[in-house]
Image (tube, rainbow, N blue to C red; front, side, top):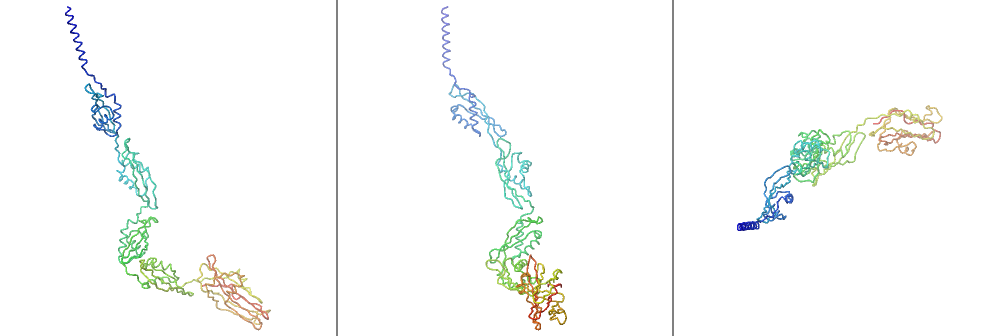
Length: 547
């Protein structure tokens, strides 16, 4: 029995020892679940907003000290796309075990969200936006209209593109507005475009076109005359004949330039007048050059007949130098400045007038004028004057008709307003006139009548228009100076006395009207027996005529 118990004890001891030996020979892994560093690994992923590669991510795990190389590996499984981002699904695998010293075991799935920008630069649709602006040619856009049109044409959603108008210069006939188009697309919204672009909207409140649109047609008109220059009237007529616009819609002006020697280049400025009258087609202006061959300047006497025709076209009044220069241009004889006109001393009579003008050609090697030298021509014309009739008012006659008695002097002034012209050369009293001298203390009979002068014909006075002076009644020295034409001048020996009647006249201008003053001076001088009375020389109540 004892032997049996002893044997059993030995067997038990051996078993315990065997278990102890086995236990001492087993290894225990020190790695931790990789889920313990889930937050840290997620932060590592999120540090980059661009995709990771497997090699980059595993290298960064080592660089960040999560584990040594090979301790943690990664595998990318799924890629998901959603609005504004891409999602990469990464599996982090810890390789820690009883057979190595890696820190982590197990695996974990983490999501890397990568933001994506699907917007385009707004410059990609520059042409489309410009087409919207250009679709309106006759009036400007408003901010609200433009933004609404962008949505209507499905270019972007409401609010995706906004616009702002910038300040731009403005003219009377056409306008240009600069618009800034701003795209509001980014990774956080569904708008399509980003950035901004500025575009110009050209429009016209006038549907007319700039005259440069027909520059080719205007140049063709100039070229149609290859051997001689155009005149202003001829060129404007050619434009009207070509029906480029209605008459008056396009006018031209020559531009003076340094003279060129064969070929000659004349520059013309063409003006469109649509801004002044909406019936015309074109606005603005343009300079075009007419190139042609010409001969050397001619002596101006070669066009004497043409100049005479201008002078003779006015038969009833004189020319001025400036009027003649205008007419020379109007008739196409020369362009402005090519012929200067100078008025020479004038000879004039009552009705027939003669005046001389010197025409000087201004051609030189510095201009393109056609004529040189000078020629003097005469202009003859007749002045036609309608006669004008006047009479002395009744309230003036009583004082004017008073005679001069005994010894004394009587002056009279008739002042007549004849209006705004004074082209009169003579004055006539239309009724019979008389001067009577009577001796003292006698009745008006034959014995007492010293002198009697009676005119059946009207008195006619030739007027000198240069007698310019207004005379007042009290200015006797001036009356003496101007009353120099005698009607009566008699000495009476028997009575030792004398009597005289003289007259004269003056012109003056006042408040735009010309006045004629008719003046008389009646004188009685007594040296013995007195002379009783000298009657007025003129019947001042009669009518008179200016012609």
